[in-house]
Image 1 (tube, rainbow, N blue to C red):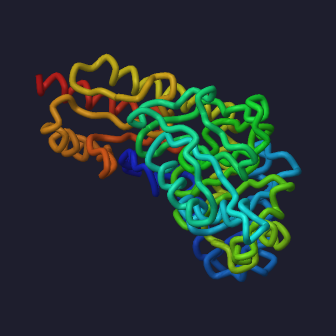
Image 2: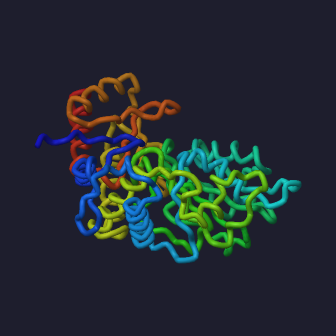
Image 3: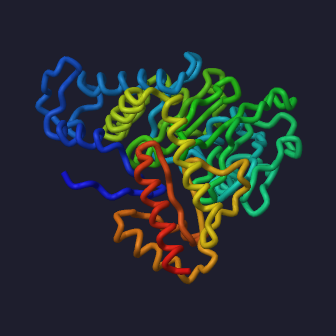
Length: 372
């Protein structure tokens, strides 16, 4: 089989080759746990049938095991991506009174948390508790201006565009804040363990590190299920989704199936402890190459650089297109930076092997040598 190109897309992103191969084998005729063929592909199944029930139950169980999710948290499979949760979270946490506009706090560290702040303002009082400098760092928690009685505190714990990552979660209780911490962890979900003692709700679009676009995972603590605004639609209401096993309406069945295969793959890799060490090694290798280069640079404070999304730039921006052309010729795909920043971006999700990173580093060094 020909070697596949290395896909550095920020999302929808590369998936493990063996997961794709398994899905291809099962596309027309899915087998259950005993190996008995169903005569149907997953996209053709009733979400109420035995076959999909088996897929859903295993996906829930494997995700709970993989992520060490405590039993008092509910795992929900939803639609709309992380962006939809910018509305769904305040709809669920800013109630239950229809007459009091609850306040939610936001720490803005990049483009995605800035969007979350703006959207939440439609459903309550959205307060900017802190903002980073040029989206190149994370404000010290001691400087955060948290509201008294806030409905929740929101962080994007990995900024896909700007390449800023919280490598540890703040201890809000230790800061004298009783509000639950809500994290948008879309672009580093399942890349490292999560300290659930510090989290009230986590959400993640699957298309960056877990599966295809169209599926969103939400992990919500039991005590937060009855705080919704009266206007919250039933299909978005966390309590209703928890009661109905994520099936208030037809769930994204094929996305759940594909994510379930990724959960199985991650468990076979040794789980999050093992995958985190691989991710640290990949990111460190690329950042070292950037930092020792005279041509490339990354502006993010090294203390909070993302392991998953590495934006970088040429000191001679006019050479960017030539580098991208060389990368495409070398089988290194989708390295163009986000439209709001330009430059380059390499996303090093779980499915990206070290070989891909090393191939990129070799190309960078060769490009710098020949362009000098």
